[in-house]
Length: 281
Image (cartoon, rainbow, N blue to C red; front, side, top):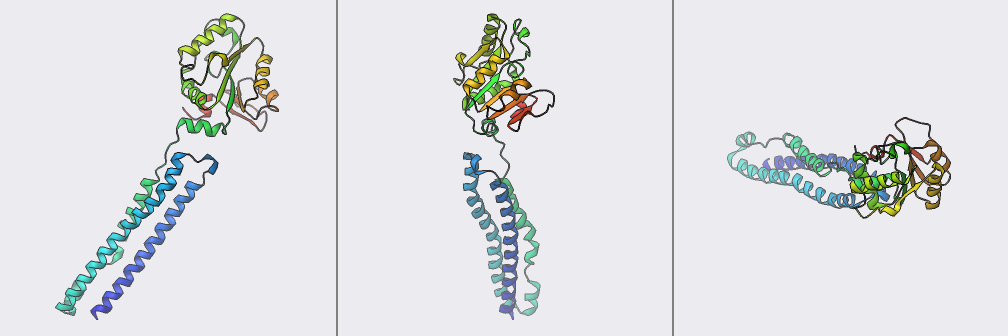
């Protein structure tokens, strides 16, 4: 009778473990689905590391789940041997606590291990820039209203101020892309003010942007002509008319405007500022 009871307990334990593993498997499958919902074209070193580490997490969790059940099995055997020596009455009093009592604790531990491993990792600004620019390698961008606080050429005759909030994004773009800045100015002094402001802001210290890539023209059409000659992957501008004119020639454009405007074309995106487009503020 004792061996029959022990066999029944082992079968119940195996059934409990089976259901636990089944639930855990469904949980991990859900997590894997979230991970691989990303496009393989956008996988980076962190994502690949997460995939590689998944195997480690599964093995670790399996060992964590198996250990309590192994210990319970050994405990049942020792108690079964003791009960066979002390009689049926004692065997009844020494019955093992049902495995269901420890099931919630085991499942909770398993979920905690997986949750800890799959904590969302916030992508770096550099990763966001590459993703948002769709791997584009050449970018042209106007200065007024995007990089500079000023919004008209007349203001540049008095001062030029680099927007502090855009600096981090600008430097990340220069690391990844061949960036050209351009603007319409009314005199040579305005050009000098702009170059001095960019230099003092540290734009030229990263090595990705040099003064020769800051272009000036006397007309808005001159800026449009620069863009067409350079043939960038992206052009960033505040002038809706220029954006509309260039839509046929440039792969992607970003229209910077504080107001929501009608989309010029399917390949034209819009945002209130450059930093907001990349989500850095």
